[in-house]
Length: 250
Image 1 (cartoon, one colour):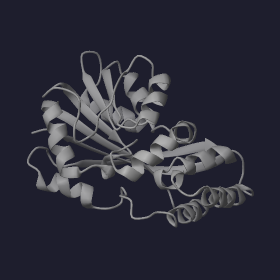
Image 2 (image 1 turned 120 degrees about the vertical axis):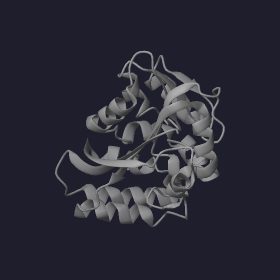
Image 3 (image 1 turned 90 degrees about the vertical axis):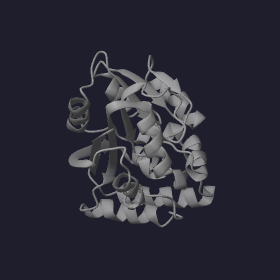
Image 4 (image 1 turned 30 degrees about the horizontal axis):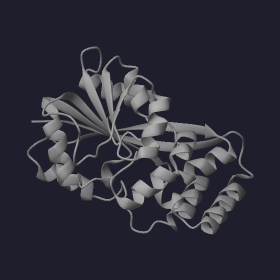
């Protein structure tokens, strides 16, 4: 994921390699859900918006659909092009998608819609979609019902400086006020990421507002994460809740 927000752009550009190493993919059943809803396959074109390093892009490509990845951050695009060869990768944003009107059958957005100018993005996505085309949003979020994950979340959130978050309602408001899309349908899946300590450090280091911290603050946080992980079984099992939302252009 990446975005046009200046903090996000700087952070994700700096953390592109850590993002690729440390971030999980998405549950197979969540991707299958999107693929079934949008009938992804040969002859269908899907645009993965704010594609980041292609964590979702590479899974969409396995459906046989033609996949276009749009990503505004150069560092992310470079990793994406290497990670998912053969997929067309374009520089663009959610507010200015570099395709013609009605050019795609579906649009997906992973880990990113909360960074967008939501009203502008909804209108622009509708422009890029053919009539009846599908939009799928997906987020992996830490399952903080597990005590050590709740502690991890607290360590990270200390450094959040008001950046947009998935849990906030503002991105949803754009869908309740628009007549361009049907109401969102929500489904939740589970995911467990197995990783070693330094991969967990990369996972946290790939967060935009962590990547832009002063180096001393980053080192202190990473040492706290290593200490948290020291007594946990190996491999570490980091649980997520994966929320998906689907809708169609009216």
